[in-house]
Length: 158
Image (cartoon, rainbow, N blue to C red):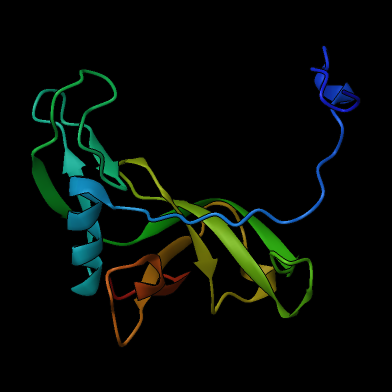
């Protein structure tokens, strides 16, 4: 039974070649559904814990600290703050991108968590940690992450 023995170390496991078809359906859940419906209205919603007051963005159903159900919701206003970023030169299939893309982790004051999304309209010499940004929403929204086209530097009028 060559090849069917169980290896004792993962490094000794033989590689598997070929394709495996996988069918997958993702459901948003209660908190996710409410959040993505708010994106269709051009709003970011956070869930708030009634016990400790922590606000979660993206929202979650239970507080990670006191395990209470988060039943309160409130809109989170821009600006967000770039906490980290990277510049992509290749897509997920390892093909070169026509234009490099900037992906950032964006937090919002007073919330736990944050959003990983594209940055746009940012001159390369102004790209930095601490940059204040606001979402640019798509004209047609369907309740998904692409409802936010990208985040751009926040306008001073806000």
